[in-house]
Length: 344
Image (cartoon, rainbow, N blue to C red; front, side, top):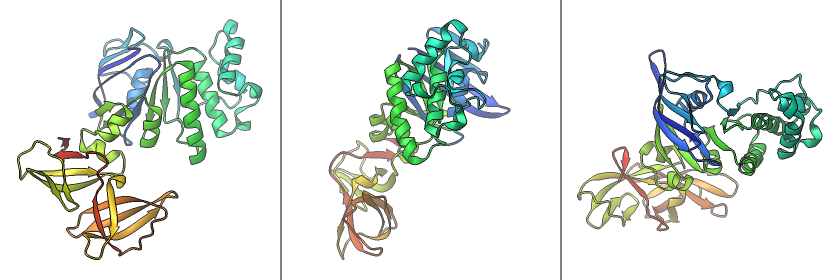
């Protein structure tokens, strides 16, 4: 493992911020730390970088212990590059001078040339930051972080200051650059789409702890806790009662047997693409609102028992508010069932 974090703890005053966080990253892989504001993801990144000191735990970078609650290696000795949310490039220095900052004179020219070519800024080496677009400034920050040849690269919400179109473009470009350079990276974000795209693995954090760590597909399709299911994918939780032949719900019978005794109350995690709609005067609900997202409508349906579900429908399907519908589960794949806060 190129980066190992074991049982990290950090409190500010009497307020615990990071509580028992453990993960590892293999060489050349990207780990996305995903979670809401205040969950501890940025503090975890700062602990790895050395900007904050561990209360207890262990951090190892490329086989070297850099922090263990007793020793604290300073940031400049950790071989950890960092790209900040606001880029933190020097406004009075040229692009080339920014990228070469901190490099020895003997290696500076060749390394700056190499890095600018990597990020596609070879022709802009003499420009100053105010002459660059937001995307170009981000590439300068990335090139500067990569120039000292760090063992691990840490990225703290690097796309949050970009508009939507540029954010999507830079997301693809930065991932490509990280893979081309073979760098090991930890990427912090609160954006689920960004985490699922960027990460070879995703760690979902909540209240200072990792709730689930795994591949993007596993995290999305097989959430282990209600928090993970709710945080990813606009999830509704449909109540149900276990029977011998499936789960009875307001959307009809779900033909899954969770291995719980008949009569057990559960909740089914249903995303908009899991719910189908058919116009029906004697259906089980009514359309209460709709949201147009370009390629589709997201319909909100209130069922007769008060349960609210959402359904993804083609942009060619037009249902007015108040339309009576029959809402049911699609049969494309098994859904995740929860008994309490954990999946069954």
